[in-house]
Length: 125
Image (cartoon, rainbow, N blue to C red; front, side, top):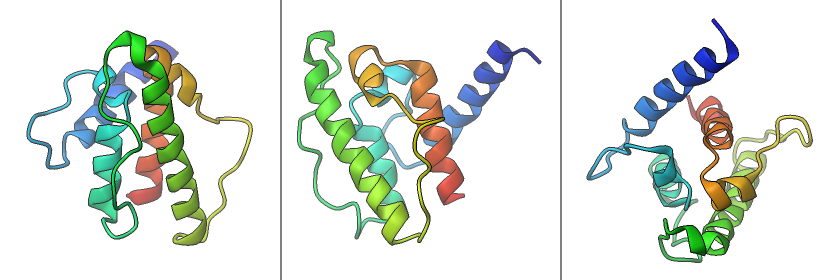
């Protein structure tokens, strides 16, 4: 299996996992995850008492509002790292394998969204 085939298979499995959560409608594309809202809902489903409240910015899938998506993703990332450190008593390795949340916010980078999803899924399954 080539790297591209592996990413496609991993992406399909990850999208299936995302859609196993109780959303009113299935997530059909990676772009739907780029503002952080669906990911925040997944985290709330995992631990609603810890991931309470709202993201700092409203939903935004328009290309000109990437700064709003980036604010949401930074908030989400910080909350997730704190949760894993405090509640799961695990550390997050820095550097290699880190997720470029800015590229997710700017252009919905599918590869980075898949990396983020894999990390979340590994922690909670």
